[in-house]
Image 1 (cartoon, rainbow, N blue to C red):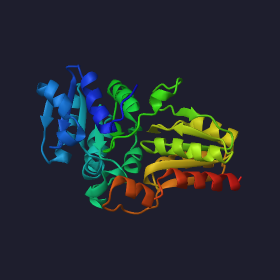
Image 2 (image 1 turned 90 degrees about the vertical axis):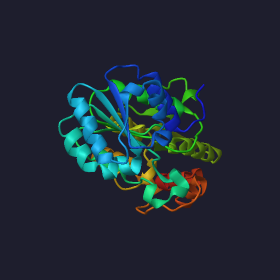
Image 3 (image 1 turned 30 degrees about the vertical axis):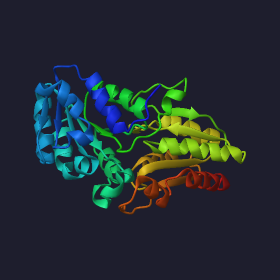
Image 4 (image 1 turned 45 degrees about the vertical axis):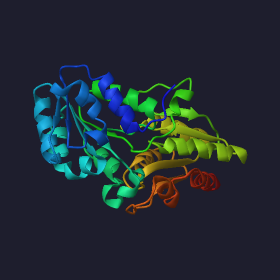
Length: 313
């Protein structure tokens, strides 16, 4: 059974578990106790480098290691991992297609009291817009562990987003669960509407499914852990079979999961679709629970959006 951990802690533990490779090197921007790369630093100090508060420099150093055959993983808060280093990621990592993994912790609103300056709500959109970049957003400790292994084994650039708070482990409750980059996972079958979620919104989507079930509405729930490449086949199948889609993400509704799914829908089935996420606003300083409810990232709002999508059929 998976533990109820934050995905950043689960990632840190998995990095140690799957990091026994002399060609794997880890870099951190003076935040190893937050990004949880400290686990790796303690076990493999000879392959860990604290670059200090010099994020752009860190990415270029990692790129240099990658040109010599290394698998290089860089770590900092998601807001810095994608924003402060965008130019280096685009031109030094993705343009030459180097084997560098960008691990952004503290993604989304659930950074909480750190406030808007540290709440990355644009990171997924920024990273999926770069050619050649893979984007992964695990939802719990079990998925984070398996995703870490898959990311390390996959050659090429990757953005891996983790969260700060501990969350319920849900994926290990499903017998058919298996992780593969680029393949979504149908957690619950349904015929009336499909809820597609990523990250810690998967848990909220499952709660919404239960609320809808009480009203006689059968919602399908899909864990879309890989935003790029998106699982087009699963999205199209869900659109055909349920006729309505709701996307749920701890991210701006512009550029993230919702946009990625909409790009598939508008080219194929073109069914009614609703978006649950931050409505093109910055965050605020408050507890994660308060923030998620304030911005509508909660089961009740997901259920309402599902009913709205059904009404639009």
